[in-house]
Amino acid sequence: MAKRTSVSPSTTSVAGGMSHYLATLTPGIRIAHQIGGRVRLKLDGSVNMTVPGDTVDLGQILKVLPGVRDIHINLLARSCVIEYDSTVISDAAWPDLLAGRATQAALSLQALFEGAFSRLSPASAEQGMGADASGTPLSSD
Image 1 (cartoon, rainbow, N blue to C red):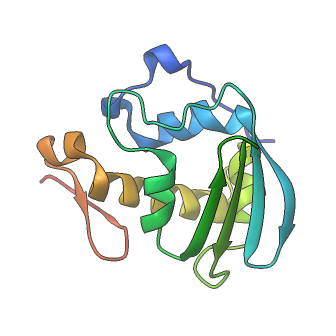
Image 2 (image 1 turned 90 degrees about the horizontal axis):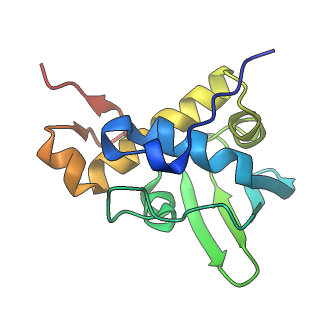
Image 3 (image 1 turned 120 degrees about the vertical axis):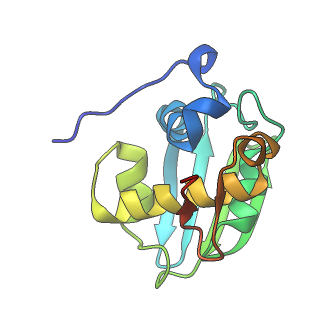
């Protein structure tokens, strides 16, 4: 069983990257319902929608995430519906990522999040980070 890493919001920063932000988010998110190509997430009160130390929020990241067709965020209901292309994002990716399992599906989804964040984040741009059109992070070498 893969060990789940938790990071407190006070130690999460842009320098920590998207993986730290995701580790902070995942304990507060559960899947309410999922069918192929569509997942409804419920967010508890601990979920911070904005990446600490940045101006980018989760909704912005989801909108540019490769494979995501549409999102509907209801802040009052603390709910998010994501419609996605299951040939790009595996249906197993969402539950695996949220459970902290280091499966290929979860790692692929995490890489897509990291690529989307690096394209949106002014702080990432200042640090010389970026991603290609597929969301693959570019190295600063």
